[in-house]
Length: 157
Image (tube, rainbow, N blue to C red):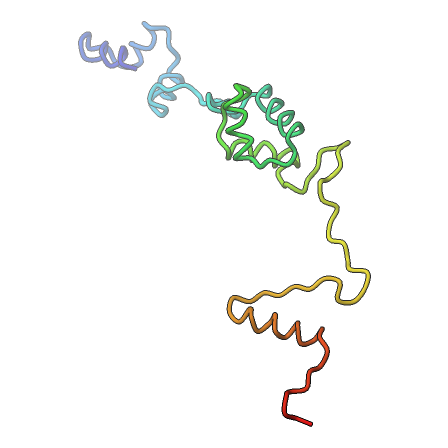
């Protein structure tokens, strides 16, 4: 493009004659005018330099299978300390999520979960829960009153 304009200015050639001298089709010259000399951009997705490699993905998944109870953040720093893979916790989470291992309740194939769920009580009053922030002494007193013998106040006959 610059050469054609240089020939036009210095030699006084018209654009068509400059293109003939250079052996450049006029269609190409005008396309370059639209794209400003830049080539066509690729249509596919180009891999970026910061993307995780397949070997790194496999290393993350195998490390998770060895340590199924750990979360993505702790896994990330443990792998960094042990020179397995150097990736951010969010990248570890994304890889685990894609593989279906992101939840701490998700257990890899062939392994048994640490917890088997809530076991229902087998008889009445086997399990009691209370959630208060104030008046905990009142709850204890009420529970003691429920489970103790009724007492008659002194002086009452």
